[in-house]
Image (cartoon, rainbow, N blue to C red; front, top):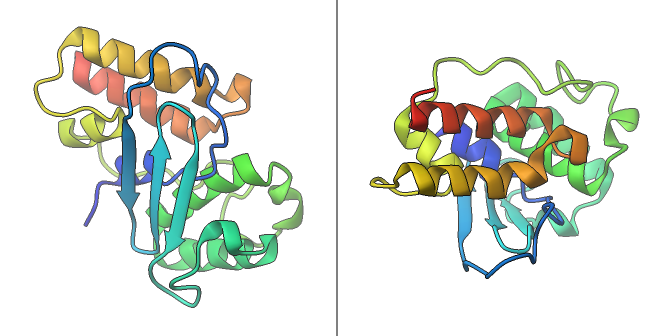
Length: 177
């Protein structure tokens, strides 16, 4: 089973632009995540996100090629079968279809919010994955990754409350705050 936090952050395929994208030197860094239903990736430099459905009735379909209605149907299925997939898909929808919640009366248990609470504390491995870091990252690396990512995910800048919380938790886990 893949890491829930990593899944939620990285499957946010629909981030079209993170604040600050294009500023500074490109790192070439990407993050990939896989949940039961989705395989997604994020380009840290541009904020471009991509994804594919890997299980269920839409298996083999790219999210970009699906209609909004099909994505909402997939979300309903994810809420029934896999919370991590649902959270990732919600983050994607928040970016690609900002008004999707207006059309999703029965999409999930908390379509007006971020979904049910995640169970268990974030592990060090999950925190590293959320920030796109590897074991051995120092405080400076952690803080730089946090700043780069949170600037585009903060809810005040159109980001997702859930994803911003995951990035904050990852920083706290790694820095011992």
